[in-house]
Length: 93
Image 1: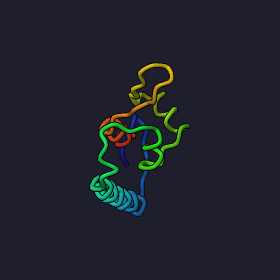
Image 2: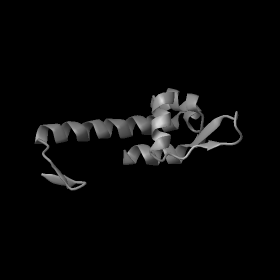
Image 3: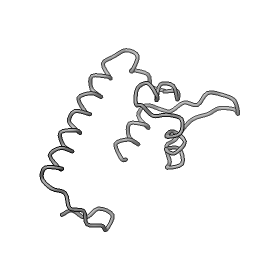
């Protein structure tokens, strides 16, 4: 049993193994994607987030509310999210 946020959560060995396996697959996928030239941008648009991370507009608004920093210069200018910030944010969540 592990304590997370002062709550006890029981996780069976089978579930924990499946989570670890999924995590390793995700790390491998991210490493493969980072090798592709179209995924080597430092700043991402909402369209880039949709294509690369499968994060839609609704989810992006939710993440902004949770503290994801988004740069938007001017009222009608395109929003940009720094790659390192979205990766750090997703790893926390």
